[in-house]
Image 1: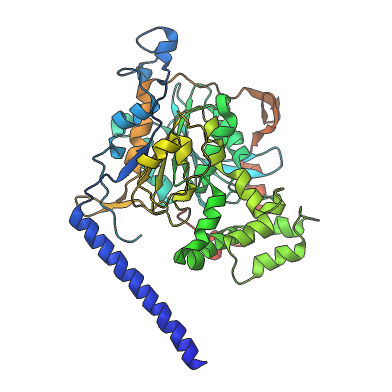
Image 2 (image 1 turned 180 degrees about the vertical axis):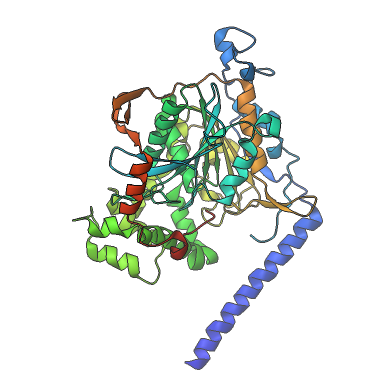
Length: 492
């Protein structure tokens, strides 16, 4: 027994040593070659129509608003990205490091989400014709995450202060970042309905605004799914997705196929969801019954030593939210299936070495069609799925490295920064300056007593809670311990 244990330990240490050695050699080679080839591959359709501008619709050369003046000739989305987002151009470089006060909204089903706004109304009152960026965070994250604030620090300052002058509204999904849980329901990778409620709140609060979207990882899938579901009625002027998993079926096969995915990531992701459930366990334990989840199963999941992502989705997510199985859940919530339905400009940035999803999950064919996918994307391991019509509204930028939201790079003065901030800022700037026509926002119906509904959608609405309501909700929520005590997952 002792010899067997020693052999296992020795082999494990040897494997770790070989992986570390390979990483050092890889980094040294990259620094020597200085990334001779382009860091980013743009997947764009070969032939698309130009984006319509508001001035073109009005038959005028200049928009009526001084900050909406179209600049330059009419362009396709692919041309707009190539001309106005140099961070994704042929000369793109990435000097990567080698290691990798808001509002509570009560929703129609009784659940609650929190939205954080910056700049706050106290210092920056609502303005006419302002641009609002709705942000969806990653797994069990929130507005506090460094990867979110890295972008907001560049887009929310005024133009005089070197920013874009956007107002950011970060949706903290149910149970995340202080959002109380008062019903036996959290959120999942397809919770696009909660985006609808927040977009309605934005439409009612900023009636003269234009709305843009930004999603990270799991939130990127939810935001892209929302835009595809809305189709022609999507109120977003455009959106950016970062590290979107896209195809959860492919991702579920890829994750356990690699050493780190099998032994680390699938337990980390499953543990993150279980930690969120454990933090807000009271409404679930107090429920008379949970759809498809016996209390014995719930108790086992809450207190077992470890759990994988697929096991959690099979035992909790799928039955609780009405899916037949984990794979049924993965298939139905994947935003990749809705790419052909996109009707607003979408820039998607993913990494070719993402350890969570792999390149098989990327919507290459949806972006460019099969023939162009074969020659455009330097991913020899890519297994192409059935061909679907490409989308003129999607540009997919695939970087050589970056992991999963791990685009860290060295600056000239030796600091470390997040590379993706620059292309996000450039793309939002390009959309604003191009002068796209304003998208129609949901019609707001005020029912009294603070209740707001979307015209024609009884299932979409909210009630903005007063400070007294908020304190009562927090006290009545299912939070058993502080988030720090439960060690909620951060970063994805």
